[in-house]
Length: 106
Image (tube, rainbow, N blue to C red; front, top):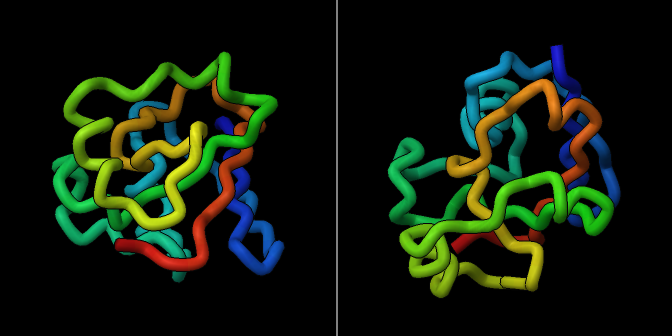
C-alpha cells in the first residue's frame, strides 16, 4: 500500500497509507486532515484541496490538466507545483509522495 506524506504549513507531517485508485483529497478527508476541505467532493471546481507537490516528485506526478489549471487560478498561495488533491490519483508509483499544504484554502 503506497504511503503519502502531507506536510502542513507549520511543518507537522502526516504519513498515511493510501489505497491505489483513491485520490489525495479523499485520503486527506477520510483521515481528518484539517488543511484539506474538499468542499466540492472532488469535482475540480473549488480548489479547497489545493496542495503543493514536493519538488522531488514533480516529474513523477502528472501535470495538471486544463480544467484543473483553470480552477487553480482561484487558489491562494499558488505556486509552480500547485495541484488539486482531487486530481492526483494514488498509484504504486506514488509510494513515498510528499505534498505540502498551504496555510489557507480558498
